[in-house]
Image (cartoon, rainbow, N blue to C red; front, top):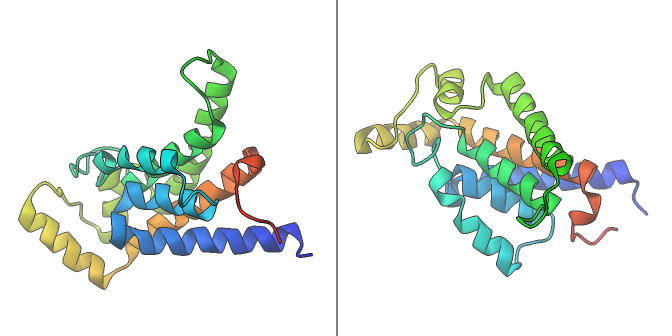
Length: 180
């Protein structure tokens, strides 16, 4: 039997790899959400796949405007929120505050490493410049830069790792992974 810490490291490394790789496949918000859910065993869950659709508009700081929350952070917040299972019928303020507290823990880690949770500020931290993706020429410049520098992939990987860690700490029974 593998010790818990070894399993956790393996799972966290998998989350990072998926987050890193999924950026190019899905973009930031959907990539982090998918990386977290796939790592925790929800790859074929139809409800999770439907929720994934709601992440698409959060790409690039919301609608590719770059002025909102970093898409990776938005995808992380959605995954954490989903893991708590709070429903519309529940009127549980404490549970809602707990959800937001865990999201804030991930946000604080992001601020520590990347200077902010807002898309354009994270870009500025990484490249000394920010981009408005709604402009096609600017988007092409950013795509070219991203091919040279994996900074956004690293952000996605980190957010996926940190999110899986927080979910396993706060909602360990949420994971569908088979334990060794």
